[in-house]
Length: 372
Image (tube, rainbow, N blue to C red; front, side):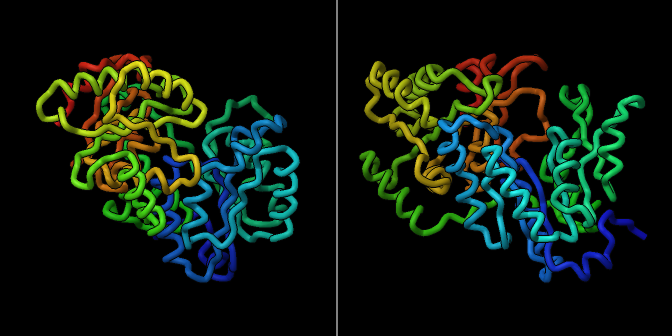
């Protein structure tokens, strides 16, 4: 008999549940499948989602950027969630959201946060003083009395997963992140999610499909021309490839007959647009266009879906490539093997050679060698 963390009788009578997570686009690309499986298994339970902003700040100048986080566009377009908490990016809004959540009197609260796990235990117990709460739990040193006390507030816990050096080196297999997420939901609710249901997907609204068609036409690209999408940007420096290498790669690709007439789209985060425009001007490449999804999340997958090849560092773009079924060359470190794009049939990996190396250790020549 399988034991699940959340009692079946509690699930049978519960009318709602709150999940707490600090989600990035890549996280949701795979975790949405587990949410979807839960919604199908428990249609009587309304799913509420708390998206905690790790970049929470008192700096008012950053609030507008954080308020427009593109993930919210995607989640708000999903029909799985009855309520979503997104205003957690400032201390004041965070406290207001806590009070709003407390008023819901949640019978079940689940934290799937993997950073500062003990702090999220405090948060979910604060939100639901009398409810059944489950959180991630990391191994605690024997004499760390404070954390032992915090974790004692949990009614049940999910053991934290850890990637070993052997797994980073490829000597020992590690489950894909989508399976890790699915295993959490199995522990919680005894859900069995088949591998075929773990592949990422994104449903692009018609208005954004039309946007992509118009954008490609505005660039002067013909509908039947092959397009390569390149992304070198990540939120962290260790996963970022120098922008100048993107242009060096394009120049080398254009010197090959197969790629000589291909069009190129270079993804640029909004704050780097001035730098990218200046660099683009120095190369005089008319068939290279800069792109930034500044208005809505769906701009990105809509344009990706019109491309024939995607080359990206390890960020959401490479996972969305799988979601829109476009071949991808993924530039990756060795530290996160569980995060390789799940669809191996359309994914080519280019990895650094050293465990401590950053993405910028990958050369243009390595990427050229990986071209189909």
